[in-house]
Image (cartoon, rainbow, N blue to C red; front, side, top):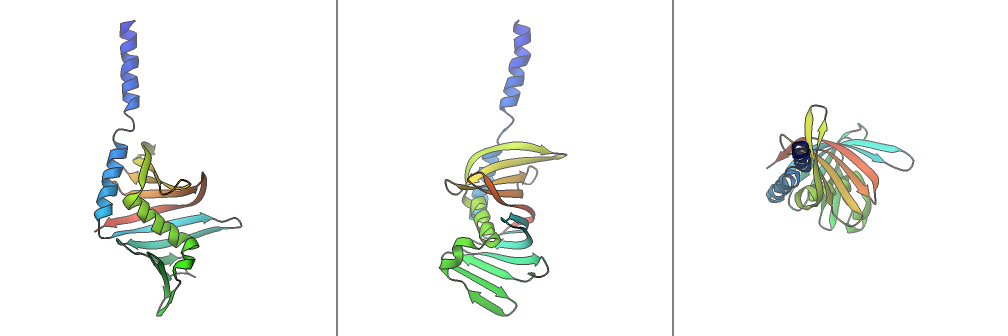
Length: 186
């Protein structure tokens, strides 16, 4: 009986350790990124609207105060740039710039979402973390919350710790998702 119980106990201990440090590694990255001068990445974003699906590609550069986004696709919007900061928003295209003021910050769609993502990467509360396998790639994943109803699920490359995919949810409903590439910190 004892011999049969020992392998079962060993398996239980192995299974309990599957999350093995995921939360600690993600929190360590978060703390490092909170101190970084700039986070830069490309985000291929998909937003499910009620009547259509909006897709775009943004180059994101997030500093300690402001977050800037430049649209690279679709072609009709390429070159459009937005800068969001505390109580301000500016949109520019070529030589023309327009301040939007604080009132319009409530719903700027993808730009606002990327500002929220960089804030979550730097300061988000890790609710839970785990490890996943995607084919040959090992991923760390975490739920990061910014409010009671709004939060991100972020998947990180196990090898580098960089975010590779994120999903924004409000009260369980996915609002948008993005694939993250070319992540850099300075």
